Image (cartoon, rainbow, N blue to C red):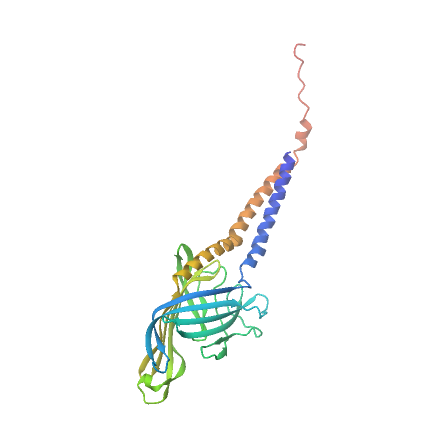
Length: 325
């Protein structure tokens, strides 16, 4: 019976050790990559944003609340190299009165594990403005998300307006609705990002149109759930203004961030995903390995044959005198 139990423990121990290795080195890498069927809409808002109304009858700044809907879909028509993903995003920004302020589209290839942009000639990487002009974009740095198992250090993060990646500084750990997140802040100092032909009347000029410089500045704060590398909250303090001949006119001045409902949805989804990923990466393999080794050791001890000397003494008691003789 002892040997039967020991053999069973050895078998269970070996199973747990092998299972621990499979979970860590096979299951976890399969889980820690963006899904091939991704299709999500992110909702953001900007309260009391200062924007420029391009209606020819207006041509002046106005203050309004904005809602942003950004639908991101994995592009199934593209077959990127192994390990990469291609996502398309359609973004619509709507004024409080329901009219469209801006529309844009983009396609971006990136590494399915690290979240960093990749070069992929066959994938196509572009952005398209409200006017329908499509421009090729050579992206770098983090695009849609941070790496799975995000670390506590700075990352390069892409910014569409300047067409480059800049440093998103790690600024510590905090929590949102009880979920642990890492805080990263990307600061882009004011700079010229282009020039626009603008009616001269906007700047008090008699000229039919003037060449106005477009200035841009950004402070982007990202709260990242580290196991998944996904943003739980994104806050962008954006300043964009047109300057000509000493006169400044705001094009966009406001703070864009996830809606409260979006944040709650991210917390609920990522809490489950983070628990699964963290378990597959560390706790389940370590626990399975330790328990497997204990059971394996116990089983080997129980199945070990007893010393020959002990076997030889069984049934051979010491001679004793017969009682009563």
